[in-house]
Image (cartoon, rainbow over all chains, first blue to last red; front, side, top):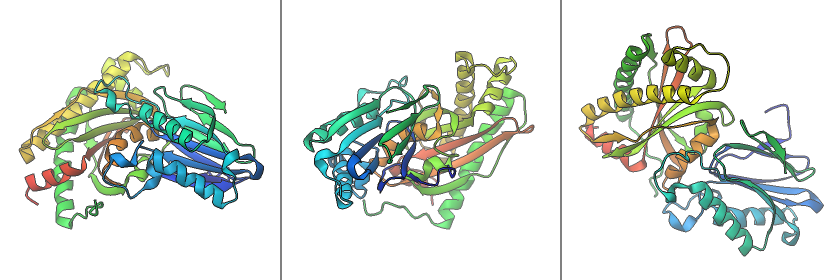
Length: 164
Length: 203
């Protein structure tokens, strides 16, 4: 990925904020959800790659970037530290697939759907506006978040490529 | 969870490696019998790595792979994951179904063949592990996914991620004599299972 020198990679259970012309990327999301926050006026963007819905449901609370209900508020704060105004922050979410849809274990196992549900709940609490989403299905996604424009390229292997 | 990262002694690591080596060796033998090809296994890697860097360890998050996944139930639950690069899975399927790789789509039949190979490897691996440890270990039916390695892995890691920041990855690479089929066999014990396995083998 070195041809785009502006790319900043956000790994699993991690979050980053940056300003244009940076491109925030998250590669190979399955049931994880990428939450992308954008403040257009100053071209500030943030990307959180969350794995689980709720920090309260686990014992190990060391990494707040891993959970929807801690990662999103933290990410918003980081953006505010760079000068973003939360009233104008817009949100896009991607991911939350169910990779092993055919393995009939139990409903609780559809962590992708639970992640998406929780993310939406948290966005509502924070009064953040969700303007685009590409979630669900049973395939992986790679995200390229262009902070210059706020556009997100979603790449998949068998389901094409799109801009959101 | 202060003991998040379990530190293995050299002796424990060596014993795990040796155990994995024997299990993988038997698995390779049963796969050679099935394919009528010589299959070799490399010395396994035993590593504790942060959950977030597992996709890199399996060849990169965006890499297109074919994965066969088993959940392991019983005394030491965990996950077994077999990963094949796409072209290697085609060759493997071709050998099993007896048709030439025409570069077309990976059919249901091909998937089923790769799943079967996975079941045989996993069955032999777990059998040996059971003999070693006297633990009861039962695999689920296989699931197969063709997608980005990262996407495939994160579904599996999510279960681990709720309890730990680190994953124990026991990685055995197998390869046939013509080097046309290469794959990875990963054993990912759940956090508590590692202690069970270690105490069962007496280290």
